[in-house]
Image 1 (cartoon, each protein chain N blue to C red):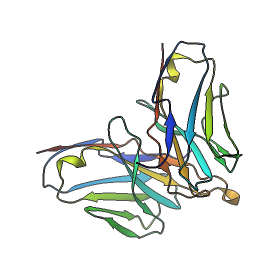
Image 2: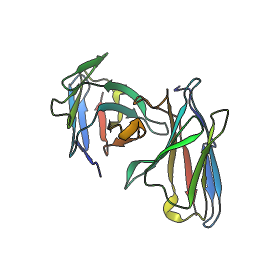
Image 3: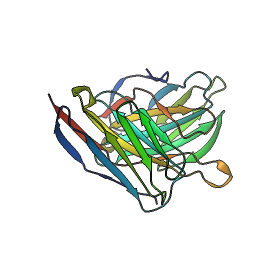
Amino acid sequence: DSGVTQTPKHLITATGQRVTLRCSPRSGDLSVYWYQQSLDQGLQFLIQYYNGEERAKGNILERFSAQQFPDLHSELNLSSLELGDSALYFCASSVQGGAEQYFGPGTRLTVT
Amino acid sequence: GQQLNQSPQSMFIQEGEDVSMNCTSSSIFNTWLWYKQEPGEGPVLLIALYKAGELTSNGRLTAQFGITRKDSFLNISASIPSDVGIYFCAGQLVGSGGSNYKLTFGKGTLLTVNP
């Protein structure tokens, strides 16, 4: 158990809908990262937050957004969903901005 | 952008054999990490390497940070059935001002161990 929690574990929704994925980092970790894992693209970095502020952006679509709250949990919002958004979404956390990132169990999103 | 080439893509070995996999990059990294992912789980950190030439062990696992900072390898000795999974390398290059800590991942090596 990495100490990072993610909810929900599975999510099935229809195209055009909006969903919110939630992540709680390990106790004491200030940085949260979101990654998308698909069969064709592998693990891709989406966005990083540090102590409530956005720090870095990867290949995140404009339809996707995230935030980190004062209690350090983070939410990833995916809107206008398309079939191609079906993937595993992982949250990871680290102390400050360290390299050693610890991953949660992921949310499997299926868009039908 | 940065790309990591991880090889081999898959390996099928007998229990007790040693395993070696590697990762190469078109650009340098400050840090190399190795993760293992099992079905339905998130990646689990195995080893982190911080200095060029560094050799680090974690039980039966040994990893090295290449001298050129563009490659890394992972060895698993005396494999056992629970070593089955996908092994990912990841590199981190800290951006200007230390603000970008994203990891760039390889495509993974699928390891199957035959008892």
